[in-house]
Length: 176
Image 1 (cartoon, rainbow, N blue to C red):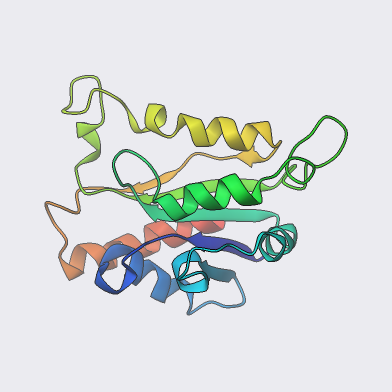
Image 2: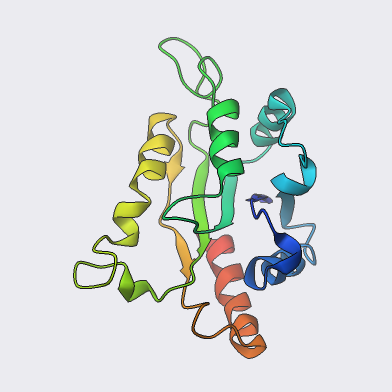
């Protein structure tokens, strides 16, 4: 079963991990449909109908992005606001086109994951910081799964470490 990977990185050309993950995903077109929002919509004008039709084709969707200011990049938030509409994604009598779809997040983080903890620098866990997305996908009756996080990029962005992340990331996508 093919998985839709919606990639949202505003500066992909300078990315290390998201760029490398995307290159790897593109090696397997029979397994993954790679959809880069900033490449598709450089003017940030989202074709809502096109996006809804794309999502309808897949039962498994991964949102891949760097964690910015304790949140998703603005284009992904805009995508959610515009694409997950009443009557399509939710509603009292209609919608629910996301119903039953397996949804997961794949997040790259600059700091080490332990910084996101009660005893860490930021006092909140990654579970707490991603809770709005969990709730949003539950609201549209999707089957939200636990996220994948690759952390510590500010501390070690070596090519070896990036390459070591590839099998972990692919395993996550294939088995979430």
